[in-house]
Image (cartoon, rainbow, N blue to C red; front, side, top):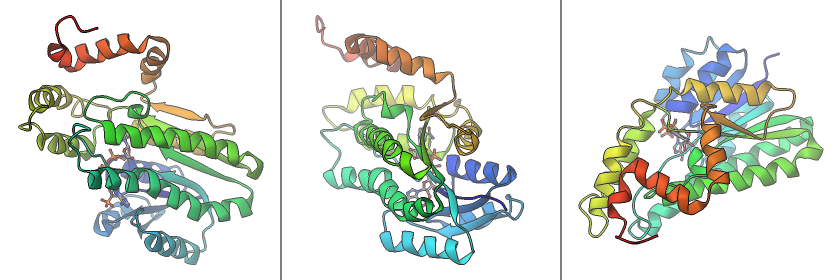
Length: 283
Ligand SMILES: NC(=O)c1ccc[n+]([C@@H]2O[C@H](COP(=O)([O-])OP(=O)(O)OC[C@H]3O[C@@H](n4cnc5c(N)ncnc54)[C@H](OP(=O)(O)O)[C@@H]3O)[C@@H](O)[C@H]2O)c1
């Protein structure tokens, strides 16, 4: 019997790569997203082990329908990969509150809603794995990433509480934290930043930041590094609480933890070019 896994946000990028990787490793994969036509293309790559499932993680009825479809296929979920996500970018002062709410609806409440819907069958089975896709941005919040970074900080906290709550039920929870990964995500973030580049008073800063940011995603690792980490979290006898993809970023996270925050601020400014906006004499 192949173990069954639900991957949300499987119509693109990390979710797509993860769905195909897990299918090749022998899992039965239920690939969920809103764009069903993209999922249908994906199922051809899975050696018959990928089943497309329409799902909008912000819509509880859609989640319930998707889980019914999975049950009708005779599957009990062993794994859930909470990957569906989006980004809202811009200066915190300027991002409309509706955009903030949309950010949280997908990245935070969507993740919680799918988890709540899947947990009863895992508890009943007395086993299961939940893998949440966070971000390095859930530990290091760059400027103009406030909405996105805070949603991924929330995913860190949810993952820690959930892992501790589910110990008695044999369900293991891991957080996978990708750094910049070469998917359509980065292009979308650049477009969003573009909305603020002519906007006073942040326009000059946004333009400067954007020119640095534009260089990050095209040269970033492929989503395969994240798919590998998800596979490890699903199959290790004792999965880690956290995986970082690529692994080399662990060092960056360690430095962020041990260095004084003021020094981290200065290093980040140097890296992204915003140091030129620091007021003379400002500490
Ligand atoms: N790429 C990176 O550099 C990076 C870095 C760190 C973390 N991450 C995280 O990795 C995850 C995947 O990102 P990616 O780079 O693969 O982005 P992507 O290529 O833009 O894919 C995002 C996926 O999320 C799905 N999605 C968005 N809203 C949804 C909703 N309401 N319901 C269901 N599915 C929804 C999209 O599918 P539909 O539009 O078809 O619904 C799509 O399949 C996200 O959680 C992101 O925050 C990415």
